Image (cartoon, rainbow, N blue to C red):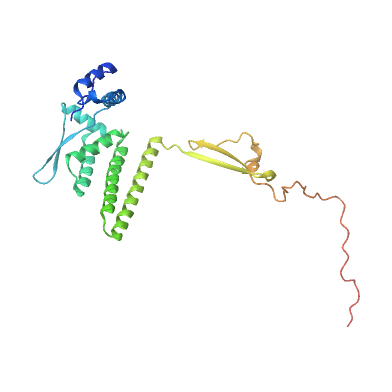
Length: 266
């Protein structure tokens, strides 16, 4: 089925085009027609991903050629998808994708173009991100395959083996996404400093959040005391309010000797 995409920003004009070319338009209610029009117009605003045509070589390899009305436009789309400034990185990433897809029996035009669509949709900023996106696609595909093998397994050891493998691959996939997020944040750090003050028998927690790796400043604290103002209470503090005894200047009485100086008996 071919879905017509109205080349207009006018909603009424888009409705007239869709009414003529979409089968079953008259069976849709008002809300469904509005939703179809909105989705068709949004789809037009998206850039089309790069696509290639794959041909098997006599020696067993693949010949990959860009497709489209303009070969120049198709090549530029491939370069942009991998954030590459020459054809060499494009060929390297293509070889990596084909090697993995061939190992699982999925080296075909549809699967390769699906990988290209994923990578292009993530808009890699540089070749490091493009390389990571290739890894992310392969890791996700391997995890789904492990899950499917676990679902079709007949014996408990097989279920455990594929289940453990799927869990490891999914964990790796999550860490890859976190790595990509850190790369795009540019190394920004978020540091939390928690100060606990339990003076007076109550715990008061003050939280300072610092971004960018710089140390926070405590404006309420004397600079001469350092961090002593935020430490725990001194030993001997009485939460009930009883003061600590203060010694007087009077000297204590002399303690009598337990034994007097008497001559010892033989």
